[in-house]
Amino acid sequence: NEIFDMPFHDNWWQTETGAIMCANYACQDVKPGSMGRPLPGVELGIVDENFDPVPVGKDGILVVRPGWPSMFHGYWGNAPMYNSRFRKGWYITGDSARIDEDGFYWFVGRTDDVINTAGHLVGPFEVESALIEHPAVAEAGVIGKPDPIAMEVVKAFVSLKDGYEESTELRQELMRFSRSKLSAAVAPREIEFVASLPKTRSGKIMRRLLKARELGLPEGDTSGLEEE
Image 1 (tube, one colour):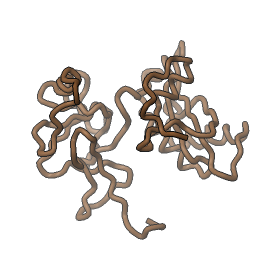
Image 2 (cartoon, helix red, strand yellow):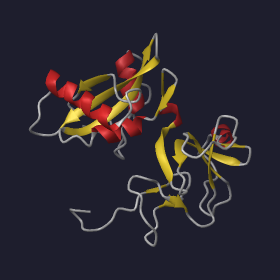
Image 3 (cartoon, rainbow, N blue to C red):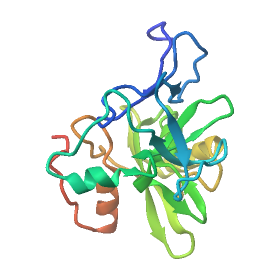
Image 4 (cartoon, helix red, strand yellow):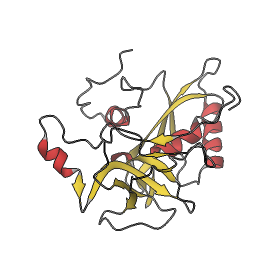
């Protein structure tokens, strides 16, 4: 707002949806950072693994009722994958989210990115969003690192803005900063400074690649990796 003198209207959609499905309307109050509310004619839901609705404020799987006008009709050459995305009358987005008491939806992360640390389910996006509020942080990518006691611990990879250099003091400062923004269970237990983060050509951080490199696993398909 300070730079452009205009409000931001966050929204949510996917390639599969073909159009914006959820948005902060210009005619209503905006909740910065939220996905907004479903557009007219669009039915969204937050469900658990049994496809039962979850309570307000609780994280769950974001689903869409099929039949919207721009709905996709298949993945090229992969009918089984397409069919797997529909269950019990819902399209499974693969995203996790929650809904608040005002009916606004909040993005948590991809369901396959969610970190289970000592029974707490942590969305990487939430941790990354907190870290980039620090003036030294340019970008952050967060993964779950296997741990024999907590199942997983939250680890963050951080690239710094020009004028800042990595140090033990800065790492500790970022730890404290993240704990002030998040609960102790959600804040990263480890922070590693990196020159850059692997991203797709569309600019999305490839957490899968970060995790594979951290654990020494095969990187898999990197054809969509942004050229450096």
